[in-house]
Image (cartoon, rainbow, N blue to C red; front, side, top):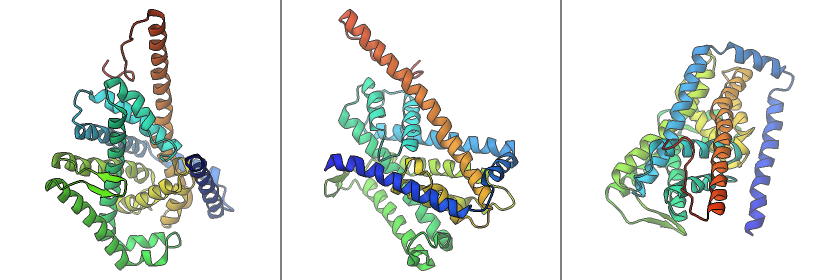
Length: 336
């Protein structure tokens, strides 16, 4: 069964990409997309690119904080910030592009953190805790968006069941999301027993850890959405709050689809949900997002992995030649 699922999820992701690309093709049919998008990219000012770059740094700094918070939850304090940051950066740069369900980052984290003495069980808890932190951020921000601006859900008409786009349902859903966050906060403050659902077991973190989670996760999403916001044209920009809401919906759809990097799914949702912005301008902003948030980090991450693995191989070779245990090294340039 497991072997079947190993093939099923990538296949579903590929189907999602094909369907989404075909839908995008219909959206842009009859337009000289390449030329128009290239022109839009040239119209983005240096200050907009700079702001998008800063947003990227904010997002990846917050992602590094995810790992730091998880390690504090595990009472692991001997690992330096540079090591954590580089490990987190490499993990997310790879998993964002390859697909979270295909490559969760557990292998990269284990290869790195095992050199610092963490066990496989500790790394598994760390990975789950980081995923929980991200999920809390999505639920918290989605709850705020749906309760403060419930009418924005109408932008999803045609993409979700009709009743979900009604204002009343949006408020109820947003309230339910915020109530869930409230229960999580209460469980942490009151030190309740772990929440067990089937084989899933949720250990409530200490209040200080919980507060950090609820700051770090929204910060990462603020930064990621900011890349697109700053890359959109000023005259038709619907505003940061709208872009944030549509980012949450589009990014979540990309994750659920299991498409690598949400390819096609993410773009289709965004183009559909921002009718006031010219389609080619939205596509140009999304290209900037993929370049800053996905492609450039992926290039750096590949080099980090190559350097790390070559050093591990060199250590193994010396160990074999000398017959002595080789000292474990970390990702360069951590702890340098």
